[in-house]
Length: 290
Ligand code: NAP
Image (cartoon, rainbow, N blue to C red; front, side, top):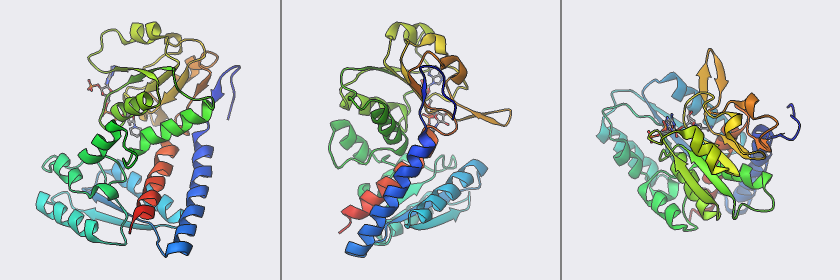
């Protein structure tokens, strides 16, 4: 991976690979000590090709970590009652320690009710209201959503001296990325600003914030420019956008080189950490199983 003067390219891919090796070792230990093989069930409703790719790669990573992967592909016509019954069966299955319902669901299904039917201790995405509440209160038994968890691990890696007192600007306030990310940064004693689509003049906000950490979780290709950043800012680019067949982030990567002190590339930054953190959450859920 190339290195610009003064800018450290955060190699999320290598970091995630090391984390996955460590997870596989801990999974093997859990099996040897207590006879538990962690199991992750992934439920996909419909035939969205992007979701299918995600489900396949999650299944592969799960098996590579020595865990059991259970994949359920249900037709797009699946009713709310049928899906709730599937989740109830997985909730009751002692071989299944983590349950993930691949989002988005078809429009006729009530996503909130479906997600909240997952037993909180098997909710490895951390999306149930109970886990959101636990996280927001800083309870140690909260399951943290995988992408923000991965971002925090990378940030701690590049800031070994700690995050306390740093200023952080999170662009995006989704329930799955932006909001939990802001929550975790606040919990780490950062001073946090959150921007969103109704923020007036985002460029001026980012410039004026002089933020030590900028997290972009927007879904707008290369929106954040290097010229907006303070010299030495750390940039975490969560975005995954396909432009002319090429994957790009929410940050204009090249324009940040020489300005940011560290930046995650796309691909190869946050993305691989998300899957590693899903495995981590599944292993932890299995470790807590009676
Ligand atoms: P989302 O649910 O669509 O949320 C996007 C957020 O960005 C919203 O809060 C929205 O504001 C805000 N926003 C949209 N346009 C904006 C603008 N012009 N200026 C400022 N804020 C703006 O998306 P998401 O699920 O959070 O995902 C964000 C990005 O991360 C996407 O590219 C997605 O593909 C990627 N992603 C990557 C991973 C990974 O593993 N690397 C995981 C999940 C998501 P409002 O709330 O006002 O609408």
